[in-house]
Length: 188
Image 1: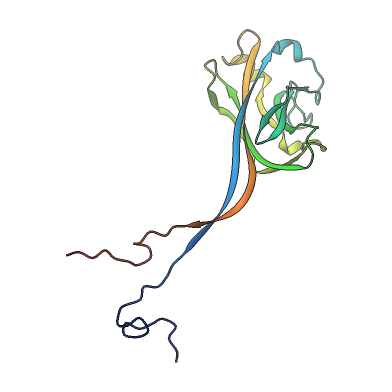
Image 2: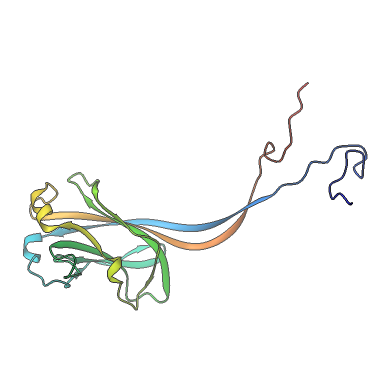
């Protein structure tokens, strides 16, 4: 029977051979960025019909243009009547598809995210030519809660959208530490 490893007295001239070990990683490279949207004059927008939205100005993250849609009376009238919804959209001028994930956060008076009102997406594929899916809509807070909590001040509140755009998937070599390769340091 053949042995694929050299013995301690074989081809290496009497020196023990250490088995080789290599490692690699598959890495999804990403670009991140944030956009803050202030809703000023909240009470004057509450009268919009369910499903009607106001679009933010475009902003850039990961080399792509994005916008937020603010639905003061929800996007989905069946399950989420009475909710405020914020939806991330790829700007209609964008060509092709973009893979990203995002987080929408209601901000407190000091501009910090309120943990109870943070909504995170899974990884999604966006297209500037298609409407966002209803499941991609983030129902952030009910109008009743917003009115009773301290986040609505002077008829205004703010949200932040944090986006991570997948920029590419690559493979990389990893360096395996000597200890993991089975090489022991000699002590004298």
